[in-house]
Length: 87
Image (cartoon, rainbow, N blue to C red; front, side):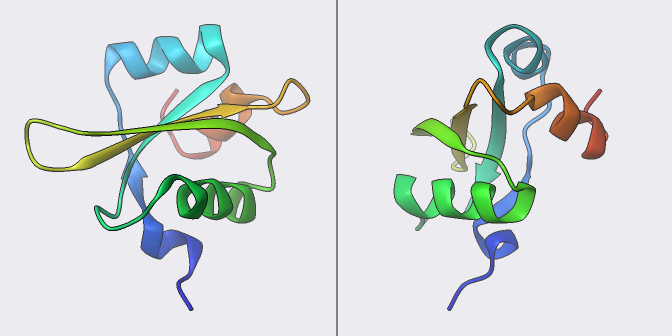
């Protein structure tokens, strides 16, 4: 069975992703290219102890898979981003 960190590779750090953290309560990760939305949701919930409302995935121009995860109102993306050293 996969571990959460086998799916979540690293946080995606751009000006736009930092704005998403601050304004939309979303986190952006580069994830394993073979993972699906359900696996990403499971991995983020398990690793950070949060509830995920929505997951959007896309492939980047560099060939990576990017996942944008929206946290529930009870959870704070800024807290997790700070723990990850994004802010």
